Amino acid sequence: MTLPASSRVNLERFWQTIERSAEIGKGREGGLSRLALSDADKEIRDIFVAWCREDGLTVSVDQVGNIFGRREGQDNSLPPVLVGSHLDTQANGGRFDGIVGVLGALETIRTLNDLGHVTRRPIEIVNWTNEEGARFSPPMLASGCFAGTYPLDWTHTRPSDDGATFGAELRRIGYLGAAPVGGRELDAYFELHIEQGPVLDAEKVQVGVVTHAYTSYGFLAEFKGETAHAGPCAMELRRNALIAAARLLVTVDDLGWDYAATGGKSTGARLAAWPNKAGIISDWAQAICDVRHDDPRAAAVMAERVRRAVGEAAARAGCTAEILDSWNWGGAIFDPEMVSDIRRQAAALGYTHRDLPSQAGHDAYFLARICPTAMIFTPCRNGITHNNNELATREDVEPGLNVLLHSVVARADRQDSH
Ligand code: HGY
Ligand code: MN
Ligand code: MN
Image 1 (tube, rainbow, N blue to C red):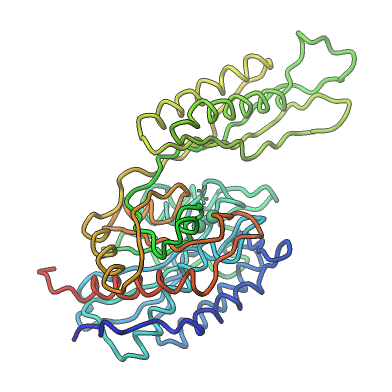
Image 2: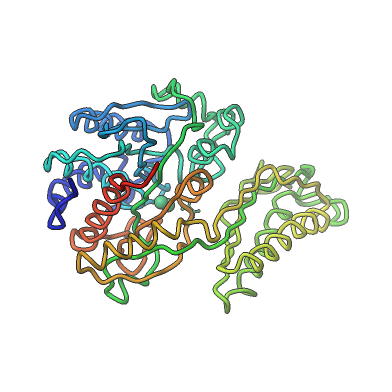
């Protein structure tokens, strides 16, 4: 039995889940500050688990806190179709980034329950831990571990800048699950997400068909010097770690401007130093930065220039340097067949749609390493995001929700050999 083409999600029911989420971990007016594994993250996790159970899903939590809700299919020997995103936010985050994808997956389940439609393959919905990397570096930590990129033990040792570790915080909030992390077959992964760019909103296009991802390289660099008095210490004797980190970040910014004409980006994202006080030279500093480009070769050249700049900045400031952590994602990673079907579903549903790349990182980038994966974008106001003024309306998200519903079911019901 196929899903009636006239099937649609229940937009008001979805919007109620968005509004409930928006109450938990409030940040600046209109936004959220729901950092991974915080008390607020626990609160929304508990609500999400309760919703999953109310909707008849079997809930499991893995050893890095990823939450799965499983809906059985007609043939449960077949690998599941996975649908989801993340509920954690940036420190000054919005109410929609990641959240639309998790709650959109839940609404898909609820709509199938309303219709009494049992798909051929099982469907699982998922909330990935620490997508933002705002509390624990790197970003997409738990989906990366699920995809086999990051070892489990290493993942658990990730430190936060408030003195905790990822594993201890999982345990503290009761989400250190027993389920193995990854290592199981998935039929496909879908992620619905706000575009986090201005294109769909500016062109008044309803659905973004995500063709590929900007290639990104991220770095966490640590500098070590020596504390000394800001007055008597001669310039040639100074080993100022804060200056070394600052020099790196200025070089990274210049690099972004060098590539801006071809759409390249660079970000100096974090500078921490100690003691970082007046009158004394800091002997420790950390810097986080990243470079991104639509052309993988240009991105690789930018990354190489960052690696060189780490050593040059350290030498200029009389310090030593180490890249403690680096990450790389993006490229032509999405499944062409799934991308084509999303385009087909959008057209069949009568929505305006257009192809476009993703410039922000997403958990889908790691799922794409282990199974066929695709993303669907919905508009957000002027592309504002990672900002408490991030805004999407019911009208913005409804088309993407319905394309997600029909794309997921078409994939889960397909009658090919496996
Ligand atoms: O960095 C990123 O693009 C992701 O949203 N954390
Ligand atoms: Mn996101
Ligand atoms: Mn984000």
